[in-house]
Image (tube, rainbow, N blue to C red; front, side, top):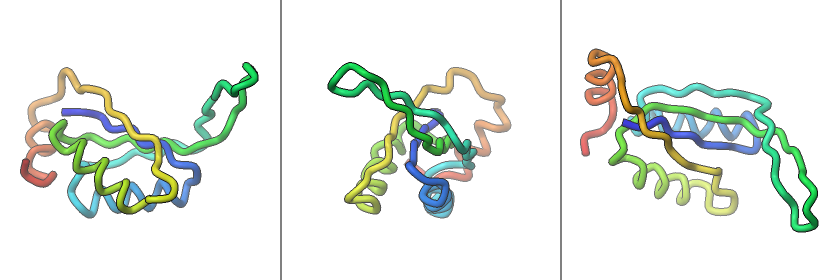
Amino acid sequence: MILIHIIADTEDKAIEIADFLNKEKLILNSMILENVIIRKRLENGTAQSTNQTLIMGKTKALLFNTIDKKLREKFVDAMPILYSIPIINMDWEQADELIKETIPV
């Protein structure tokens, strides 16, 4: 099990991504956090801040590559930032729900 993080440049894009992944049963559910500040180091050594929107969703680790592929196909010109964090422990009933409510792998 993993917690997938997707960083989108707008709230509308984040909602589109979350709805798409939920509809395709690639994630169990999603949480959208607006106004996440991303700090990036520029080539000249200074830092720049941008407001982004973070999507988090629980899924199976084996679905990561499928999610990556589908997002790359859908957002050819502007792939959102995508990475995952392992879920070490989870309530058994919630884990069973995740297994049943996402596509089989």
